[in-house]
Length: 119
Image (tube, rainbow, N blue to C red; front, side):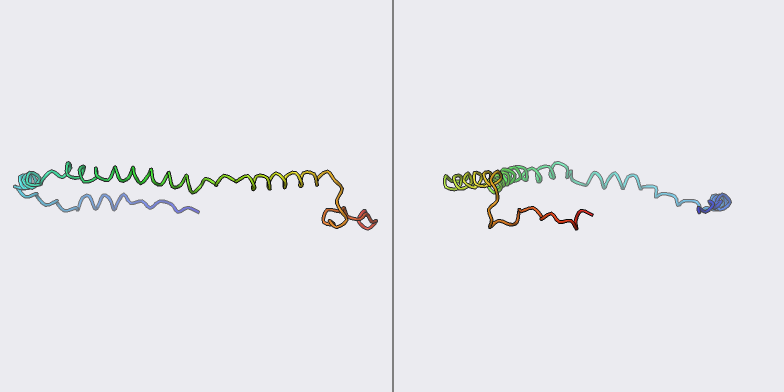
C-alpha cells in the first residue's frame, strides 16, 4: 500500500513568511575576489607540461605488453616428431571407429538384452 502524500503547503507558506533576511555582502567583496584571482598564477599551462611526459612511456609500455602478450599466448609450433605422433594417433583412433571392438575392450560393448528392461 502506498501512503497518501502529506500536504506540506501550510508549512511552506509559514516558512516563506517567517524566513530571515539574508546577510548583506561585504562592500569590497567583489574587489577582494578579483584581486585574489589576479594574484594567482596560471596553472593550466603547467599541468599540460607535467602530463605530457607521460605519453611516451605509456606508448612504450603498451607496445611492450602487446609484444610480450603475443609471445606468451602464442603456442610453440610442434616439431616433426610431435606431428608424426599426432598423425599416428588420429589414424589409429579413426581406424578403431570402424573395426570391431576387441575382446579386451569391454567398455563399449552393448548391454545384454534381457526381458526385465522391456517392461
